[in-house]
Length: 174
Image (cartoon, rainbow, N blue to C red):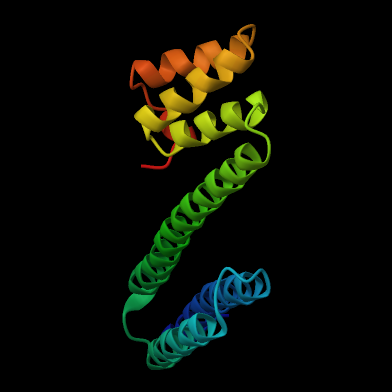
């Protein structure tokens, strides 16, 4: 049995489809789960699905026509995944910053209710450190140490704030 160029073309197209379809399914699942988690609004998810549909039809069209070749299709898919990963990362950083700012408000409210709460000042100072607001962190941690001078953790955090030394890259929000 001889393998003809038509058979090779069929196998190449099936191979491309075996890459395109699961990748698009993965992106669709990501959009759906982020919509369920409320990290994407319905409008953002629908825009994502519209862009995904366009990319899917372009990919299917290229597979059927035999255009772009295998490496072109892989490049197209990896660029789509890279764009998705960048979008997710920047969105995560924004949500993390909002979460920290919300924590600051919570600790401030706790301090208003109980001005002698050393833990609230301590956590407020640590949150300011994560936000790289070193002066506010130093002020909050100094107050925490006035209320609880034996706290080794607060001494360490205050030293970090006074040295204006940020958290390691894996722990901070730049």
